[in-house]
Amino acid sequence: MSDQSRPSLWRVLSDTSRIISSNSLHFAALSLLFIFPISLFNIIHTLIQPPSPFNSHYRRLLSTVDSTSQGQIPSFDKSQLIYFLLILIFHLFSVSSVTHSIFHAFHKNPIKISSSLKSILSSFLPLLATKLAYFVIFVAISFGFGIFIGVVLLGMTVIGMETDPTAKSFMAVVFMMMILLVAVLVYIGVKWCLVDAIVVVESKYGFAPFDRSSSLVKGMGSLAFQIIALLAILQWIMSGWFSVLAGGVAARTSDGVCSGGVAVQMVVYAILSTAVALFGPAATAVLFIHCKALNGELEELKFDKLGEVYVQLTQDDVADKV
Image (cartoon, rainbow, N blue to C red; front, side, top):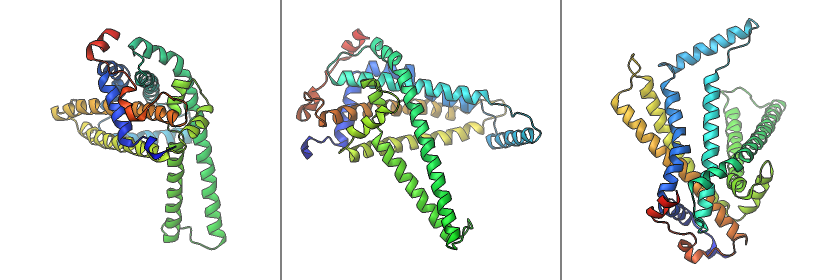
């Protein structure tokens, strides 16, 4: 595998942007249907929260502890469950439809809204099963890491080291363990970054996509890490902005109406957050195609003329196909 044949971060990002812009109406429709509602759910969920989130949460915590101490079953917050399910469902919808569209547009296949919707029917349950498999793996890793921490603390006690949380030696050990945990999570994130694309395109599900992703991304770890880091930074920026806006909402007037400035910023946040959420699975799908090509599975892909790999659809063509 020559270095010249390896795609760069700029190539993946430019390919992703070119596909989306060439089929702008199609991806705008998918964003409006499946991605924008996620931002809307976040805003609505924030608006319906009590004006003083900390105090409200503190009171709910005290009531839960009190009811538990009295042998009562604490009340279950159904709104949180509904919110989580809506976010999960629309996230799976968006991943399936965007990945399907990117993959077919890249290979000169006309893309239609109807075919993207059909991909959801065939990919939703496999994606959900794979997410559950990932959750099981994550719980197992967390459990193993918890045991590791216990062994380390026991070893510190045996050799006579201080285990007081304020001790410098204890803080240094905790810091090292946190670094180790972050390194493990980053390594796993890079190895399994193609899982969603594999589920949608290759119809694998469960634990199988994890091995498949590890195999495909081999030799492309640096590029995968760069893409993951870029998307994480964008998500971090959007999350920070939303936290500031949520603070503005929490300070709304007693009649429950936000100020005009906060409302405008919420709209801008929803639009930009939708664009970032669209670019995530789209860039991952493009990376998946490059990885398949570099592993000899897409011999027709020519990196020296990458712009000719997929069809450049005009606005009229997209409108007719939709």
